[in-house]
Image (tube, rainbow, N blue to C red; front, side):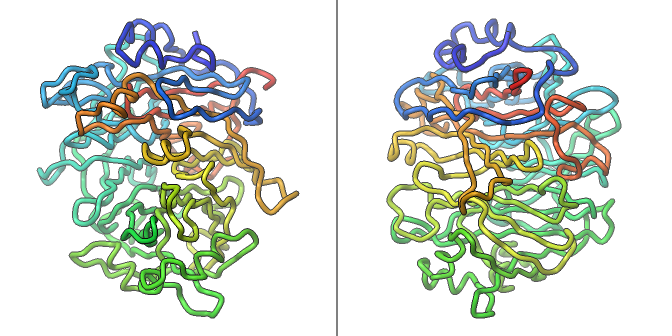
Length: 516
């Protein structure tokens, strides 16, 4: 049974009615998904209105199956962590009660294959403390499907909530990012063995990578770690001052991330001078921002070395003359470019009231001769507008098809009367300055998220968010780093996932009708 456009879970599971039975019937235990076409060519669908309970709307030929959901019990529960998407430390029920449990919001996904076993890993962004889970995609018994990988640190301090995740094959670690200002935010590592099990179950803070509101995290073939920061700047003119950076960490030894050099991206203005945080803070409507958010523009870039002090990476980047952006969130390398093209999203101001340039963000491309080069060029790929904004997670479905999804937030949803959407951008279409963008997913709003939107007890988010869009073949070797191979959905084990965050916290696998 596949859950598709007309058979969504929203109405039934939003109130917890028959959730386990319905989702259990939908879950596939096969090691490999059914045959799928290798193209993400879709017919556009409409976005859902921001009113009441809505079902997910998927393009014709695409269906989705839940692989885990918030109430699913954990195999090895810990104090307060007994469910996939709920923290029960406050004793609250797993319902829409005013004192319900914390929804921990499983976030970005990492699909990995260890010894023939197919797993999906994720950190959790909400609740009183962070933790890492693993979904066994081959396990038919739902009570044995989700494992708690870690909720403790090597130094004994509190575990922050997590957002980004990736696999580092050189150190054999999951890298997870905590999206908080220094000193809480940063990168944490969880070592896995050859079977995909946690070596000691402890998260190690990687202090050499600095401390900041990191969200996106991605490796390159040289062993460097690329980080994309998401911290909103000071409010002005209905929007926010650019305040977040793109970073690159070059380890002294790629098998050990305990030491190395942290850099931040600097953009050179048309006058030949670096565009700095001080410049943009003094004038949040600086002409550079308008130029950056104009099709056809291109700017030279260079990497500047940071000296990170007690105030963390964000302050160090500003001091070094790096260039801040309007909440960049996630980045990936374009396959087939030998890690020479890095694409990242910029969420923007996530409000319809901003009068600032660049308010609706977009997608940008950093081109370099190699991932280790010290210079490059930056240009816009897609520029957002009120109907297409809050761009967040990003993944390639093929060499020329870029998947981006929205995280607009409850306020923007109400302002534009639209819930979030998932899009595919065709990078190979040069017929117009703006690339073709097609909506393949109009996200719904389940009953649980609807309740929280209108009657939230105060500690759970409302409207569902699209997160964790992820296409991978699960290769855990150094040759399999995301971006090394062109995805071929439907062949060679390539699979696609996304998480409907907040509410019922369902993680889905996408499948495609043969011949679609």
